[in-house]
Length: 203
Length: 203
Image 1 (cartoon, rainbow over the protein chains, first blue to last red):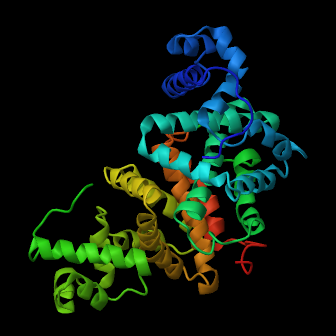
Image 2: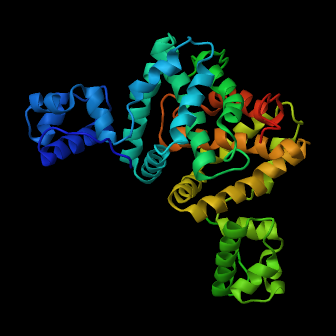
Image 3: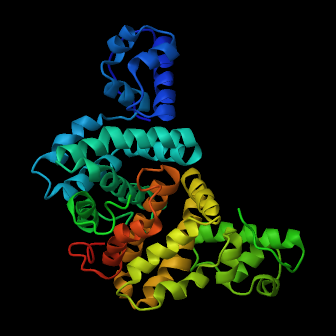
């Protein structure tokens, strides 16, 4: 996986214990039900130290996942311009990451997810709370509909990654990004903001 | 994985050598470029014996994948009624398999695909030649468009399996099948038969 460069504060062993405790807690209880205090207790350190090293719970989650980018940095380019063209922007940003060297981290995450249940839970929490929830909130999507819409978006995007980077179905695997934006953006747009007759309210 | 019951002809070692040679050949060269003769040579047996044990190349491929059903048996229920409602029927049949005990074989295949490149090639060949090619041909889809349409279908269906059975995004993971048919069928229908402006011809 790609790692960020630059100075990291603190004792590497302490940092690693906190990150391991964070991963376990997020996978076990989910992001929302996990507190910095509980992670600190599990790691045997003071909560103030966790804040000092990592800042917020969001930042700790990103650090614990070892992903080479912070999803929050991508949000403005997905949200700018409002809900109407969000599908196309979402697919474009997604392919931009996966087609870059960071895509290797994506493949590694996918590999973990299918191999270990706890990794699957951790990755789902990460995608749901750090990416999709922010997108649906940023687009003003009804909170009662947001989780079903978000999970449908996740289904198409996880499958696009599977088909393009792992199974390598042609011609999809070699297609230019804008071809896939044209193909998949209407799907994502419908899942985000379209009429979903027979879907919402049933779940 | 679920196995079929019933009498299997021949020496188990010979059968297993043929199946191993078949898997290797299909992954290495693809289904279309692999002959029964080449598999027989690799397994050190007479081609007539391969025919005797397994019948056609299609049947040999199904046997070598250890899937608990023959995709050809599912085709009539997808194709019956023509192209217009094929999306809904496709999603319904897919969920019927994955929600059944056979779904465990699907999870095992997915696990292999993300862990080993050769398994990914084998599984892609299987899905492309044994399932999707038959569906697109059976629906009368233009052969020039069939592979792009099929790979888009693969992207949504692989992702639906990931989101429902592996990552378990809620409420999608617990939703009744018909809710997901309502959600995903229009996507599959568009990929199979819809206008794909800016997609076909680029690939």
